[in-house]
Length: 219
Image (tube, rainbow, N blue to C red; front, side, top):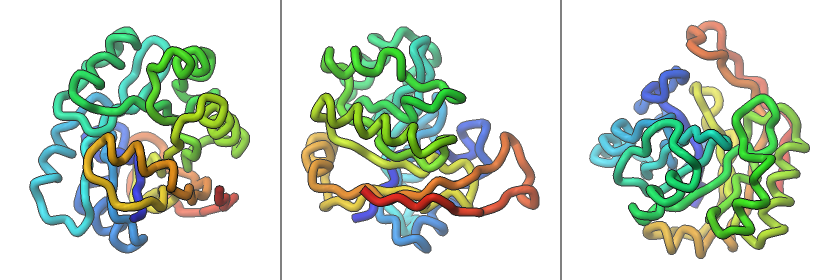
């Protein structure tokens, strides 16, 4: 299966990607599963799971904390904005969800880089996003992959798409899974595929967006 672990829809507030377009583009790129990880919102993903969109939707959320952003996957309840990071971790795990670190070392986004090693060492992290298609430099992804390796944590990939052309930029090829524990266990057998892509500026109109892929990497 091809699994994109980090995508945003219009429900995020800074994305121009509708759910129908997301599904259409995911199918066109051969993506089988999409974790919709809107900012501080899960309603769109929950609703989409009840529709036949041609692609499997899993519920996630990207959550801002005072120490940087984290991903919660397999959620059933929304996590509020800017809670202390330990409380966010506790709330995700209380739902049976998984905690991940997105774009941890991208200096222009709210990554957890300065505290990432400590979080991993303390057992607060279930996976590391080792490839994010929107980072400003490939070295930021390399640093995230090294973080996962240092702590023997599984790695994911995400397009972090906020517009249609971003869909399909990154994904994990992995065995089929059922639920969070099975997903985490099978990530070890996965293969990350991704390319860095530019993305829409916030609230950009459709005619200002471009799709210019570059720097394809395979791990």
